[in-house]
Length: 80
Image 1 (cartoon, rainbow, N blue to C red):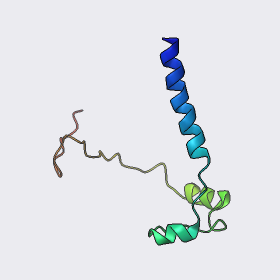
Image 2 (tube, one colour; image 1 turned 180 degrees about the horizontal axis):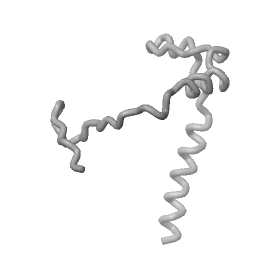
Image 3 (cartoon, rainbow, N blue to C red; image 1 turned 135 degrees about the vertical axis):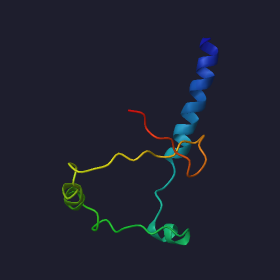
Image 4 (tube, rainbow, N blue to C red; image 1 turned 90 degrees about the horizontal axis):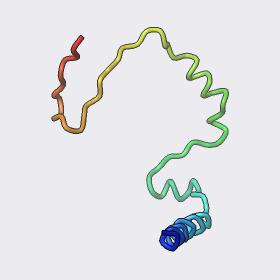
């Protein structure tokens, strides 16, 4: 049991060090793949707080999302 645990731990350690060497993606690389990144100055804690503050949390409607086993457009009425 201890021998098998050490082999498993070795694999996890290898993954950790393998992906730790990766560099962050630059905006130029992201544009090449079609992803538009916002500039760092555009997203601040204050701007995001203002967005959340403007949300009306007192008037909302609970909407049920589709389940994986249901066909598209098929929903069942909620039982009360």
